[in-house]
Image (cartoon, rainbow, N blue to C red; front, side):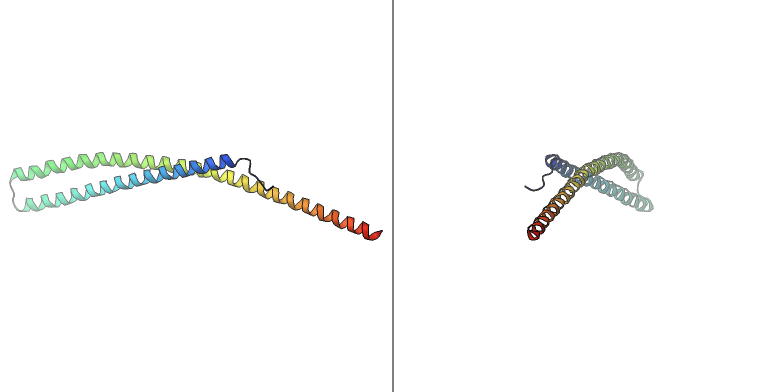
Length: 147
């Protein structure tokens, strides 16, 4: 009979928890990256619109045309501010999921180390028993040869 880790079921459960945490972290990270890209796109659109407005200004465009650009830029500013909040929330969620993953990994690694120590102790005990047996055999052979 070989070594059996008594906490194997718990170890498998902790491994499952770690995999689940890894998936949740990956999902949160993808969401955060998508929100960052959305914000970057919005900022780029605002800069482009500002450039368009500046060119229209140099062409001596009418006041209503400039007012439309100004209103659009105001709306973009509000959307950018709202997107920054969404991005910050996504980042916070990502960090929480990362910390949960780290905790799950530590719990699993702790059990891995316990299993390893148990296996080492088992092997050491097995080696000790084998040495005892070999020593007994040697002593018995020596006694038989001495008679």
